[in-house]
Length: 273
Image: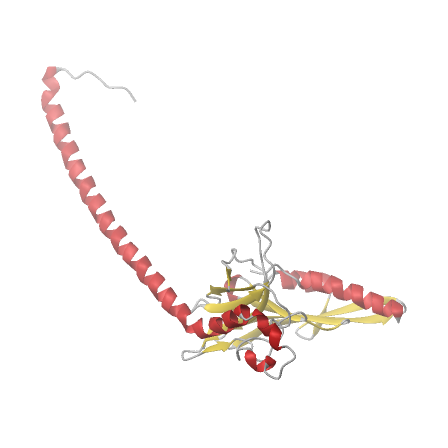
């Protein structure tokens, strides 16, 4: 899970824009005569014990069956993620070969990277991580690739997302094949299958688009779009906000975006070695 960056991005954009513009219980006694009642109670208690034992046996059977279900689910999950092995191998090769730094000035440099490795993640040496998460809830895990330096003292480690892969029934594919994620364009994902893509196309323009994955398991479908565009009014930078092309206030802009940001529980990031 990646913590929301849009507000920070907007603030940073505004600062850059402004600078640019400025430059430009107890027992009881039972009498003997009540003994028959005691016998009846003991018989009743024995019957209760038999019933309880039967219930325990049934519950044990259910637990065993449930355990088998969990094992089957774990097995299915493992098989499910094996579809991404060849992609993870590409990243592992990059890490083990020190990002091919010794080939940087060679004609073989670009071709050394696997075909599924994005352009920006390879620009500088860093720790590379991956995790699996069923974003659209269709039973097939998606693969998320991220990078960053993991501080041991940071319990809420959240690396920078670089790529997102899904499975089309035959092959593992990029969810956003036309986008290169990195510094100016990146993504986060939230509950209810929402994927947020945020970008900054210039110092004066940024945007946030929200997607869900289509029924085919790999096609991103746009569900909402927001932009913030800055301009000068005298010496003062002023922003215009819009949602799906319709102008809205800054308060509406922030509130509507935050409405999608239902945080996920922390993901289990695994470092690629």
